Image (tube, protein in one colour):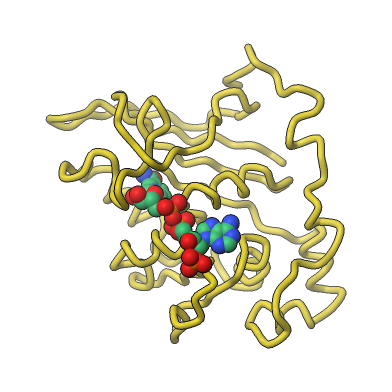
Length: 219
Ligand SMILES: NC(=O)c1ccc[n+]([C@@H]2O[C@H](COP(=O)([O-])OP(=O)(O)OC[C@H]3O[C@@H](n4cnc5c(N)ncnc54)[C@H](OP(=O)(O)O)[C@@H]3O)[C@@H](O)[C@H]2O)c1
């Protein structure tokens, strides 16, 4: 089932334009881990150019009004949606997780359960064994493409915006919480995009009703 066909993408949409960073290698310092990967040359650049890139899994839980964060927490804090947290941890275990610095710092299990975090940050002190850093989403994905396993992009706001604009295959793992919530971080509007719905499951706890969607976009 294709959702969102009532609002087809305008011809001038973000997906009809080639993002400027695809015209050149991403701008990463040669001394960084990402720089070392890029220095492998044509093979790496071929991957960047779309020949060998991995699909991205975007993982988000948001309210009907797209609110996904408030004051550094989920909008529903101090309530927890335990089923969503359990599924999120299961789906990301053993995978490469690409995430912003605030998400990394607020997720104690980011580097546990076999996860390989690639943290987008300008702060070099974040880097340690098992935790890679990158200065931008393109640089983080260059690192992630070279690692084993799947790539899970877990936010935050700017990272989701940039990831949705990439000409890559995407799977959106969306937990849509059927409530209007206050927020200071919002998931980008996704409903008008031409997703193919491959999964949908309704669920609830004592506070919320929510739906687990799996939505795919070939490129
Ligand atoms: N409900 C959900 O599924 C979900 C998912 C994700 C996040 N959230 C919520 O969103 C909030 C955290 O997300 P956030 O958007 O505030 O922060 P974030 O993206 O986790 O971290 C922001 C920091 O990451 C770096 N960064 C992020 N995007 C970048 C980019 N495009 N290029 C270069 N650097 C970049 C910068 O780090 P430096 O300052 O170190 O340079 C920036 O200050 C929390 O409230 C969290 O609960 C919710």
